[in-house]
Image (tube, rainbow, N blue to C red; front, side, top):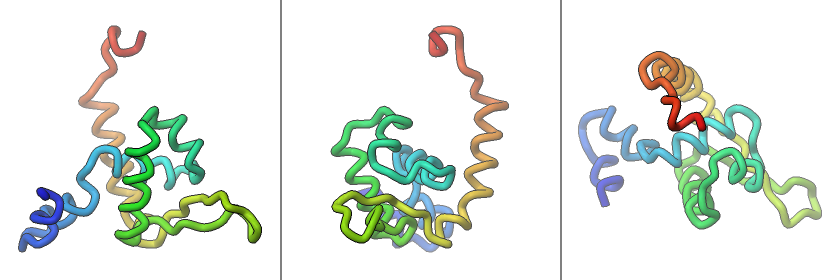
Length: 112
């Protein structure tokens, strides 16, 4: 509900957050941009439930950020390839990662 409301706002930041503002969406997109394009690889990297990952991948495909492509012509398995639209987010996501490294240190409790 919030997502659809944001995509209709006049503010470009609100519209962008309506499309990519979900944390699992951003992390899924980040990992596909960095070479993890298969479902199992993404699930291993993210540690997310299959149903959540399936939903986020579907949304990314529907929004034109990923393309779902068969691994081979005869395969029933797919990979998720970032589109040009997704590639244009790469620098923004790099800046977010750098900000996180600087301002969100991993505590000793979380590292264990």
